Image 1 (cartoon, rainbow, N blue to C red):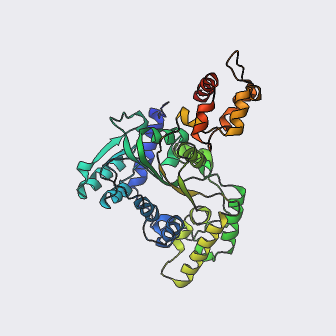
Image 2 (tube, one colour):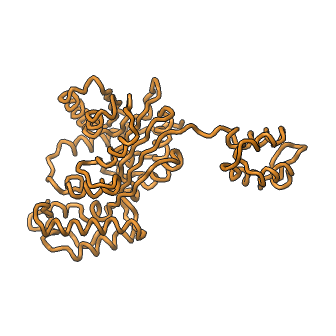
Image 3 (cartoon, rainbow, N blue to C red):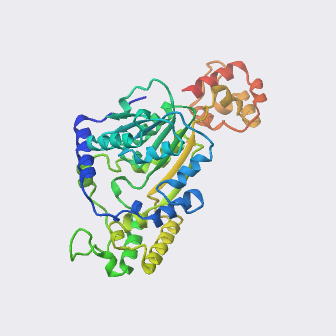
Length: 380
């Protein structure tokens, strides 16, 4: 495949940004993943029950496959916590972990050593798309890293290519608008929510005596790109790319317009042990879930897919149904010439639709020359 490579300048900038972020001591409880109630809400959407833990609902869905994976690959592993959790749970035996940040690679190594897992992981600081695998893997893990890929479709194809047949693609990620440029509908909803929140909820956690704006607005895309070239660079392509390479994927849209965009930093002012605050948060999460059916984009999603054997050309031909076969045998319906063995422009456009759903016995009824012509066309 054409490899998605990072320039040294971009790679260095990403390394510098995330190494600095990982060294900073930040305020606690300003982001959704630090709130058990929000994690339970997401897990209920994914799993059907409000279990505790980050990505726990998806992990339990993975367990339903009844598999233990010999070797997994994870890109943008951070400090390795999510991958080590899968290993401790006995779901994945070993991992190759990719990370660009020098500081995060250091933290991952330390964490692996403290857990006694260092012999089961291969740590690589660098561009995963340049790595040559000696053999296929049976598990590819993306957890809030796929949205950092500059070209998502290539990253998903790469995942498909390195997986063995029966291998699993696993994703829990931001899938919203590129560079966090929320839609007008999302901004209107977020603003309306902020307008009715108690004033104390809007206290700025980073500025004493300051308040966050009631109007929800987007970050400047250029400024975000300058800070971190990888941040949500092509995130809006994720769902479609997964459907293209893993048509059997089980996906779940998990929302985020409220808990991610609207409540960003506001969450610092919500006390989950306070009954009033707890009730308000629960109502906001209900609104977030309802927004999924109202035309507002989902900012997060999960996916699990098994790599299946692709249809062979013979199987594609065998899927032609009887009326279509009769049309093909008559030739002119698709502009196929018995003399030249070629299809007309119209015929070429129609042929891809003649797949799926018809008995394989019909294959034997196709004239040899036409069969060969169909095969050549489908292979193009």
